[in-house]
Every structure is written in C-alpha cells, then in structure tokens.
Length: 354
Ligand code: TXA
Ligand code: MG
Image 1 (cartoon, rainbow, N blue to C red):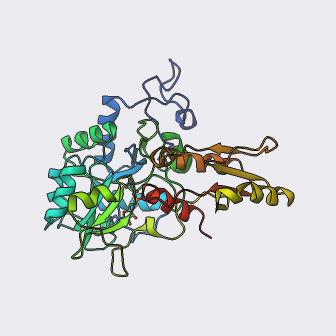
Image 2 (image 1 turned 45 degrees about the vertical axis):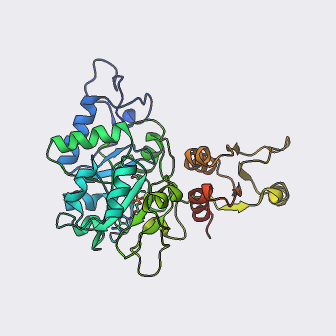
Image 3 (image 1 turned 90 degrees about the vertical axis):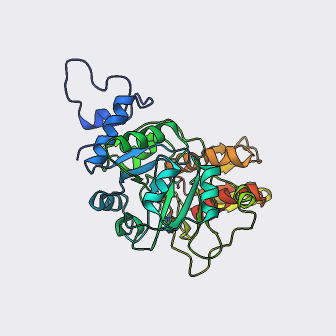
C-alpha cells in the first residue's frame, strides 16, 4: 500500500498530472470529507483495507469488523498485541443485536440514552464477533459514535453490505491518541489506505467503557461520558474492575504516553521544579493550567484551560506539541481531584507513568 490519502475537497494534484506522489497527498489542504470520499472509504473497507476516520472522541483506525484478515491488519499497523480487543462501531443501536447477545436491560437503557455518544458497551458476544475482534474473549465492545462523518461512513458501509467497523484509536500502540487527521498521518500515514478528515475531535479523549459481563455493570475506562450520568440512568453505582474483569489495553499502567518523559507536578511546586531542571541544564516543556508562564522561561509552554471538558479536548494535541519540542522533560501541572476530572486524571496518570 502507498501513503495515506487525506480526503480533501480541493484537487490534490496540480491540473495536468493524474497521480500525485504519495508525499504530496500528505497534509497541505485538509478539509472535510465529501459524500464521494465517504463512499470510497466504505468501498475500501469492504475490500479489506484500513481507513482512519474521525469520531467525537479520537480518530479511529477502521477495518471491516466481519473480516478477520482486515482486522488483523489493524494490529500489525498499530504494533498492538493481538489479544487486545477492539471496539466495533455501528451505525445505530439496532445493530447491537448483530454483534452481541443477551443484552441486559441496563445496557439497552444506556444505549437508548447515550448513543450516538462517547460510551462503549462490553457485552456477551454473538456468533458474528470473531476472535480477531474480541481478542479471543467471550465479550465484544460496541459503540455508536456521535460524529457526522463517522455516522455517514457507517451508513455508507452498511449500504455496501457491512455490519460494523472495528476501530481502535488510530495511533501507534501506547502512544498518545490522535485528535486530528494530521496526528493520524504522523503515526500511521504509511499503513492506511485513507484518512477521512473531520477536523479536530470535539471530546478529545476516548469513550467511557462499561462492561455488562458480570452481575454488576463495571467501569473499565473513564472517558468522554461522565460516570454520574451513567449511574443516574442505571440507578446504581458502577463497580470498579477486579482481577476477573475483561482486559482493556487503555487500562495498562503506561499508555497514552508522549515519547518525552512526563511528570505531574502540583501547582504550588511547578515553578520550583522548572528552576531545578533548568539549573541542571535540562530543557523543559510545560503544560500549565493555573500557573502563569514566567517571563524568563524560554521553553515550550502551553496554558491549558481550567475546565475539565475543554482540557480534555486539547490534552492529546498538547502532549504531541510538547513532545515535538524535544525537551528533556515535560512537566504537567496537576489537575483537581474532582469527579469531573476523573477521565483526564486517568490519562495524565498513564502519560506520566514510569
Ligand atoms: O473513543 C474510543 O473508544 C475510541 C474511538 C476510536 O471509538 N476507540 C478507542 O479504542 O479508544 P482503543 O482500542 O484504543 O480502546 C478500546 C478499549 C481497549 O482498552 C480495549 O481493551 C477495550 O476497549 N475493549 C474492547 N473490547 C473489549 C472487550 N470485549 N472486553 C474488554 N475490553 C474491551
Ligand atoms: Mg487506544
């Protein structure tokens, strides 16, 4: 396969040349996907190719969920261990019955309330959910993404006979998830047939994952949908995973990590910590939230917003930008312990592990 095509409304090559070279396809003029591009993406998926696409959370690296060979290419492209299960993205809650069986009432209620949306349900798998998708587990993860381009693609895929698109986040395994088409091209540009561009993602961190595979619904990963909203619909608290809970790769201690070593620092220690490193002749890149940039600081500095939603939206792009500064260390000002920040805290803990 050649380099990735980023769908653009503008012509990709100057007039008079039929085929642009792969590197000319890379970013330049990225605009929203048009209907013919989406139709082409659906056909590529049906032919077993990998297509990256936007969701409201992060970009996904998609393959036909019913084609084990195509699904295996996802693992090869990401460098992800084959026993890590993938989420099947579907066009509507009605498609749940194709991939899952024995859907409990609580799960059906959550689907009705929150889909399309940043919620993944883990349910007992049907005969259609192959080991390649489930990582050999008896359960399958399903969600309906709330993004017009993702939904258009899922409907176009259904129109050509598809049932669902298996897609992990479209980053190299363990790296920061992509929130723009450019991020996908940076990580996986050579490995995908197409990157459908839907602009920067709205939520910015991955979906909340709830498993219905044990007597009590269990939170496997905090994410874009608040736990309190889920518990309000269920009328009961979510359990936290124990040793018997299904594996979730986003739950590895070190994940979502920039290449540069990153550490979390309480606000009141941030300036002292910077001084300490600078005195040791180390360069520092900073993700601050409430602390103002000192006048004499000449490294990379990002001032993040101080609300949890806005912070989540910018988090991965910020980590990539700070990483690109090639500093010796990334310092991240700690965030509040409040429940609103749960998913962000989870990502920061993993990004700064080890
Ligand atoms: O927001 C999201 O969830 C994004 C977008 C693209 O939809 N996807 C995403 O996929 O974050 P990924 O593969 O990076 O993370 C999916 C998580 C993994 O931790 C995986 O282990 C877990 O979902 N998962 C999927 N199926 C599962 C299953 N049957 N049992 C337990 N965990 C499962
Ligand atoms: Mg991921």
